[in-house]
Amino acid sequence: MFDFLDSDWFIIGLEIIFLILISYDIKRYLETKKNEYIVNIVLTLGFAIWTLLPFYNSYFGWTEKQKTEMIKTCVDSNNSELCECVDKAVFKTYIYDEYIAIDKNSTKYQEFKKETKEDCLDDGWF
Image (cartoon, rainbow, N blue to C red; front, side):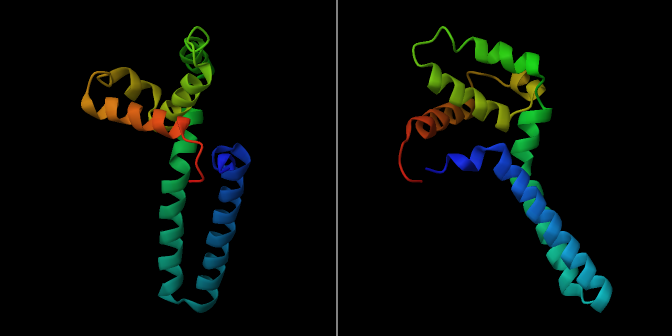
């Protein structure tokens, strides 16, 4: 139901909204010189970075060749949809250098993988 949250157009829409909010606050600050608009600008920038960082990690942290090599392993597996979903979560969470350097047997990575598989298999509302 909430698959649109991962779509590129939703992220682009968020970027546009953030730009509108920031430009409005800058305009209002220049008109009134009230400090509350500076707080709004800082909070909006902070929220924008927190929200959009996974988008940029998934597009600029991996080259297309690296993505296709990782997804290519899914073709041979029994559940290719689950494998692709997990790979997309990896793309959004780690940049390529981090993913290569991470210990695949660590408890942190295993927990990430387990939670991601549960999220991919969950057909619930939330």
